[in-house]
Length: 350
Image 1 (cartoon, rainbow, N blue to C red):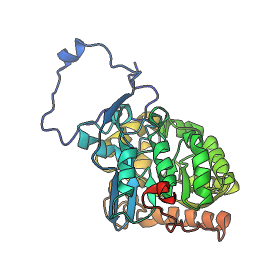
Image 2: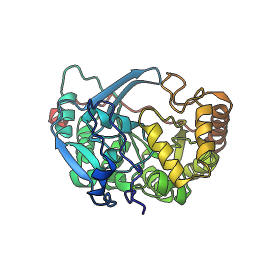
Image 3: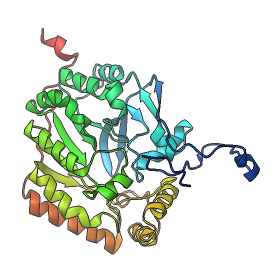
Image 4: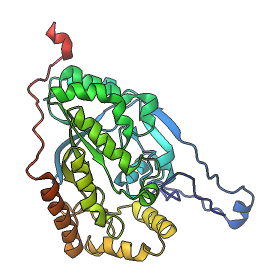
């Protein structure tokens, strides 16, 4: 009997390295209980947060100020680096990450308070630096929409990355921000192969739908890009040119990528996942990932962790660069405008 949770990326809950104690059950214990539930429900855990802005000064992403209104992500992408952060809150990086979503209910209020502080200097705020701000929880809580309204009110520029068509719900606000040169957008497309996409990212929209999202936002005036990330050797690296071409044809003007790295619990989760879904490819894919990261599946080295090293990583870099030159030419993003920022919001206009 297949006891994997239906519609989820992870097949297991990995151990949390921060827990000091773990309970080991005997075979006799397990025989007393029913088979594990396969239709796992999502639990929303509401919290009142103290802060909302995360700032990174790492050499890979300097001056990166991001907002994540949700911890955990129901999209269930098996490769997601954010899985490890779920362990800080006492959960597993596996199924817990997809089914126990922490909702920062006061995120909009914290953002408005931040923009009103004397120390705040107008700068681009990135939505979805860790988890997707347009994951299914957003349909209920509308925290992202409320924060877009605040950024429009204060004229503070933003950049949004998502893989969910729910972003189109807020096209009215995004169009207004675009007219003021206050927004960039990017859609993550890992694969246009539906069989692969459905296994990699089980609760996301199709690649075709994501291309339609790029087109719609582009037509609304939003400058759009595509993130072909992560690139997984032996699974989706051959799709790089096709994804970039398709994105360029619907209005994207740039593309970015990262090479997959399996840090922390993600190594165990990904190994279980690929051996289950693609047993004939598992060994080859894992070995090629190692080839990109100095013989390991994980990589925390600044400057190398996101792009990898070695012949295979160089092949990916060149393939991506060639496709960008071919399909984007000299197009590039304009710099977002910080000069319009209104301290105190629009009330200062009256």
